[in-house]
Length: 100
Image 1 (cartoon, rainbow, N blue to C red):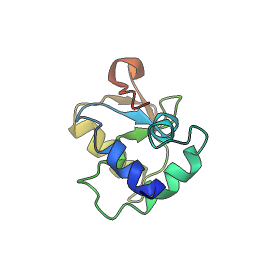
Image 2 (image 1 turned 135 degrees about the vertical axis):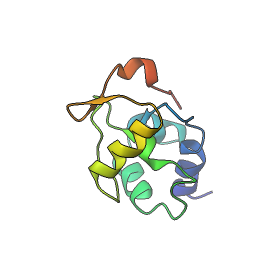
Image 3 (image 1 turned 90 degrees about the horizontal axis):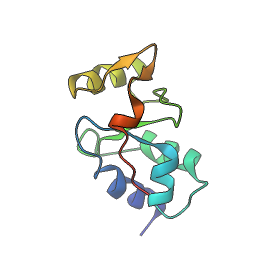
């Protein structure tokens, strides 16, 4: 299975109202240090929003990139119940979903 397919499969496990990180997703896809490759795979996600790439954030809780823009990512996450303040996920540890 291609790396990006492993990424899509793993990101599909993140439940609504939770977020995970590029780093955790890279580990789940079998390559702990490939977090930049994860970002590239998510940017090319042909099945958004079914494969919820908007639920992947940086390890510090900041939102990171999104193909439709940061404002759209924030709007979708808020709709799912994730609280964002100052461009970061509030109570990050409470909503973090570890995929690794």
